[in-house]
Length: 274
Image (tube, rainbow, N blue to C red; front, side, top):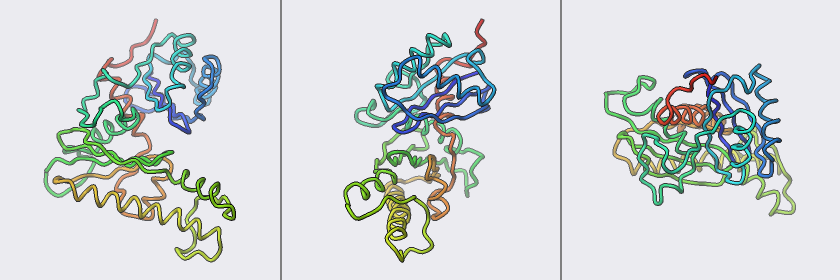
């Protein structure tokens, strides 16, 4: 089985693939100061929730946007699982040319999700119904700590994108920078016009954020000469898709699937260790 690890700023997502099938998906808090042994303990306990253990793992692939967290994960996998993970970075074959300056500045998670999005929904994929057979590009909107927009052409090529503050960052900024404003849960209020401070903040966060996403997508589309499919992923994707038609598909396993695809391109199918 293949262990796929996506180390994000807030959470670390761990998935285990049996062939092309995602056997389980688990989430841990990202810790920059974890030791090798703490990583191993957390991973072993997480896998046990799905009745899996280190002995079931044949190989590993990892993407990280938190460089200080990488050594502990590599050491834990080497020491306790006897695996040298494939780390997504310069020199790793993705099948997706990067038209970004410089290419290494693109987050590994963004590359992985773009690879998976194009594989599943771009080109002439049968997963998406469209009029005609014109190849499609994809736009991936990832709602994480930051909200990122990534554009892949029908060729395919990674063209670039947009980085905006995530909705959680916006909510925290209101609470910390405005002395009289309370911290609120990010939920859809009963109406756009707030009748009290809490609902007014919720309206600004939710509807303001939906409008931000719609506006950016409209401007991106205006610069493209070919059809695209918009895929949302991450924690707030379902909420945006519920309030707007701009997100056509919600797919929460994009990064893990992209890691699997990149691993297969570089190392092939994981083989059972002796």
